[in-house]
Amino acid sequence: LVGPSGSGKSTLIALLAGLMRPSAGRVNIGTYDMGKLSDSEIARLRGTEIGVVLQGAARNLLPYATLHRNIWLAQRRAAHTEGIKLDDPDRILDLVGLPGMGRALIGELAPGARQRAAVAVGIAAGPGLLLVDEPTSQLDTAGRDEVLAALETVNQERNTTIVVVTHDSDVGTRLGR
Image (cartoon, rainbow, N blue to C red; front, side):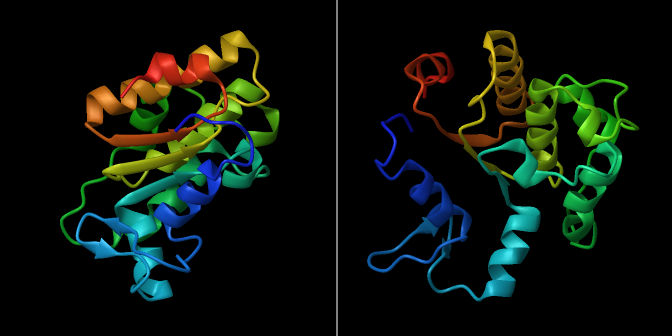
């Protein structure tokens, strides 16, 4: 989703994630009508089938915890759901370009690495849908490219549908449809 600030991109992500309820119309994710689900049903979906990466990596991570701990917390609900097989946290970190970083504290990471850590947390439960809001904002070109490569890898290796919100047309062009 590409567009200028204020055009409703982040609002759409919030609706798709069940963080907001529609005031009119319907929001369907697969067979689920997000407006009709209870708060606990939405929480279950976000813990198993819908991954969310909010704008600003800090909003997705516990800064005093390690990468492994952040991933484990994101996997908690899915770990107790029958039929879900979870990846090892180190495999997830490899996938997003942070190999061997599991013991690092979030607060010690560079901005690009923090954003990739947020993506790792978003995919930790193995969701079929990943919603990502402005993943490259406030990153330099190298950090932007690292995050985009991580998203592309997640899409290709996991067949995860990824909806990315950005105001950066270069990011939209690179990710394509």
